[in-house]
Length: 278
Length: 302
Image 1 (spheres, chains in turn red, brown):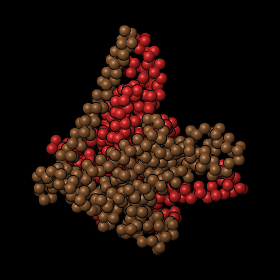
Image 2: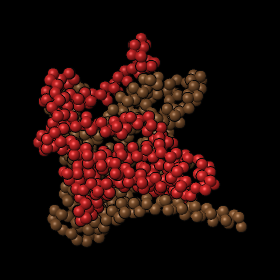
Image 3: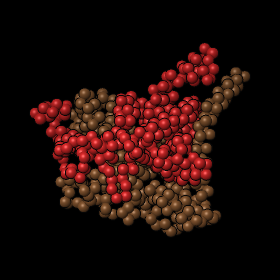
Image 4: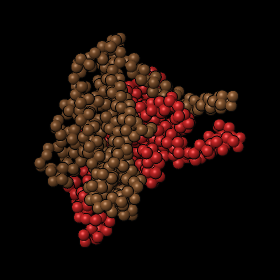
């Protein structure tokens, strides 16, 4: 009791404090090793949990300069993630709006459910034909090709989240706009879209997350000049030796875009993703 | 007369919405339906870049699969179901305990610990896969086993056909369960507190409340979260591919990695496409099944 108070965790009893400690250890122990390896000159010197003796930044400076630097993959990732997300939203926003209005029809509901089933399409059964088609159309190892191939993955997510968003907008608002003489496109663009903006942003962030971390499609259809960051990072592992120091440093750097996409928008995402679940 | 006019108006409004759907339908046809049609077409061929064959084979590839000519594949399907089951059960208990712990805290502390529990998702999956493989499970540092004091008790798991799949499962739960936790925690936060207070007044113990009050209300959230998660795990690729490539001795192949290897490493596109079509039907069927269960039990749309 006293211990729980001293920890001031708001926990009622000791078992819960122990449980919390166990979970925190499980989450953080790998992070200890990640940091220890990233900041040590020689990873083989690390045995168990202790503060490493020689801390260094050379793993970081190594990945920021030279032939195998981090910049190009980060640039590719940015271009691909942003373009794919915008393309997916451009397609999904009108579709979700229409599906929201057609939900009283059987075909409308059926189409919506089919978007849900589209989510179950295995990447492997899409990447196979994409590879063969792209090799004929000279789209392998191009950014355009990757954007085209990643869009069908992001699309179902966007439609799913966005329809819930459009469902939550009262129809009276739209009717009022059309009574005031606004046309269909005007109502959609000037009345509905601004209200739906937070939901659209949530869908965009989620689809950006899934696009950014994709591995199978990018590693198959890209070449060294178009590798994205998640594929670049696997390159530190070679047949007989793995450069764990630079790998860990790169993993920590790669956490920053995730923090940017997800960490700062956590509360916002929780509110808007919850809308998708209920 | 008026009713007819309204009906006609309705129809024209509906027509307008079909227009809004056009880009999506074009995208689905061009980016999903056409590629899948190609997959199906290749699946009917004997198309192998390694031997240089490219001939029509009819349903030969499918006959091979269903008559057990590709035993490894059938085993990998069973292994995938096993993997999905273990990951789902692990995720559920782990994430639910985390979410309930957070739920019992004061908001200020809940915020802090929630951020800590979410940390693993900041490490992108390919990075965690390679990191766990080369640091946490590697024989040299054996980070994970050493920190548990098991370094000399358990052999490095990735070299062992029996243990490798468990090492992958532990890695996956560490890396991906925060998503499940996030959705559970969000669900708990939206619980109606007055119901909980009422059960407190009634003198229910913590576990009674959990079983009879919290779990029934949480059921829809749990169902959707785990259904998504199960589908994703069924098609799980990067962790297995980067940690073991299906080895040692094919003991960790899941369906996705098996098909990928067949097509892109052994360059047997024909057989690979046939396997991809089988998995497409299986996974599409499973997601349709999940949707139907949902509609039947909760009577509403997703």
